[in-house]
Image 1 (cartoon, rainbow, N blue to C red):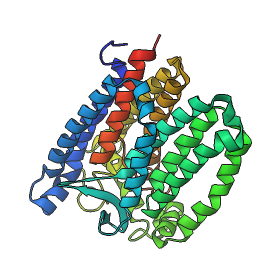
Image 2: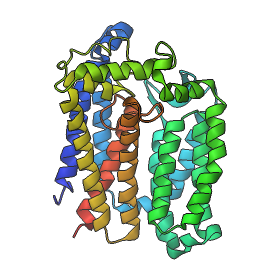
Image 3: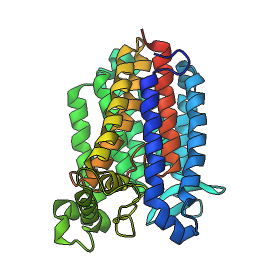
Length: 364
C-alpha cells in the first residue's frame, strides 16, 4: 500500500467513480440546466467545485491522526444535532419538494443529514472501543448508542429523510453487531422501530404512494408509478451496449431527478448493461478494499471506524441501485460519488480520506 496516499486501489476506484459521475452527471443534467439556468454545464461547474472541496477534505482526513478524531467526537456530535434541529426551523432550513433538508450557506446549500452519517459512525466506533465487553450490558453498554441513534433517526424523519435514516440505522446496528452487542438487544431494537417506521410510512401520503408504486408500478404508470416505469424504460432501451453517451431520451424531462437519485438509470440507458456493471464493479472494489482495511487494523477503534465508513458508502450505493431497479421502494438517496450533489460528495470523499489514512497507518 502507498505510504503517502494509502491504499492505491481504493483511491483509484474512488477517482474513477468520481470521473464517471462528472461525465454521466453532465449528460443527465444538461437539458435540465439549459432550461433552468440557460447553461447546460451549470451542474457540472457546481459539481467540479464540490469535487475540489471534497478533495481538500479527503486530503485533510488523510493527514489527520485517527486518534485526533476521538477528541472531536462529542463536539462534532453536538454540532450535528444542532444542525439537524436548525434545518427544521422554517426561516432557517430550506424546503424543497416538501422536505426541509438543507441549510443555506451563501450561494450553496448544505445537507446536515450527510454529516450525521459521518458523525454517527465516528461516535459508534469510539463508543464500542471505549466500552469494550460492556457493550453486552444493556444499560451501560448498549443504551448510550441506542439513544444517539434514536435521536438522529427521529430528527431525520422530521425533515423528512427516511432514506438517510434507514442507511444510518443499518450502519450503526451493524457496527454494534460486529462490536459484540447481544443479538437479543439488536432484535428488540428492530422490533421497537417497526411501529415508528409504519407510522412514518402510513402517516404521509407520498410514502404510501411510493410503497404502492413499488409493489405495482404499472398499476399507475402516469402518477405514483411514473418514476419506476421511466427507470425501467431507460434500462430496457439501453440493452447490453447502451444507446451511446448523451443519446439517452428518458433524461429529457421523463425520468425525474436524472442527475441525482436516478442517475444509475441514465447510465443503464446510455452505456447499457456494460456501463452499469462497470459502476457496480467499481463499488465492489471500493467496498472490498474498505473491509480489507478494517480487517487489517490492529486497534478496535480504527477497525470499527473503517468498517463503518465502508458500510456507509456501500449501503447507500446498494439502496440507490435497488430503488432504480425496482427491488426496493423509492428512498430519495443519491449514488455516492456519481450523483450530482455537493454535501454527499464532500462527506463521502472525506470518508474515503479516513479509510486511506487507516490503510496507511494500520496495515501490516
